Image 1 (cartoon, one colour):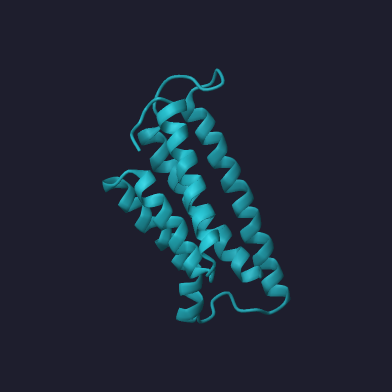
Image 2: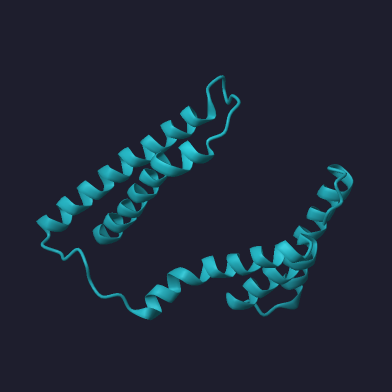
Length: 149
């Protein structure tokens, strides 16, 4: 567990440094948020991320050294796939949402995920795919009056 904490903290540290050095200065924008410039608010958030991610890296490294655990171990492809497939699943449907309205792809998104997770009752498919899609349609067409779905 400490190894996972170490690598997660290291990734968050790299991400916060990237935010502080490139993203926020380049794309911070103007205007005000809570009476403060948006770059200042974003920078404070990135510094908080950097502080706690750095603490996570240091404490997990100390615990690994005390337990004499290696920092780097081999990773099995099955374990890696287990961690990556949900992100790829969402990415595929984000790409589909670029070309098709969300109410068209939402039932497939939910239904296929139910199928992957082992659901076989057709009533659950109807309820879990139909109700959120109907709610999304009512929200956007009738309540928000944008009608883009």
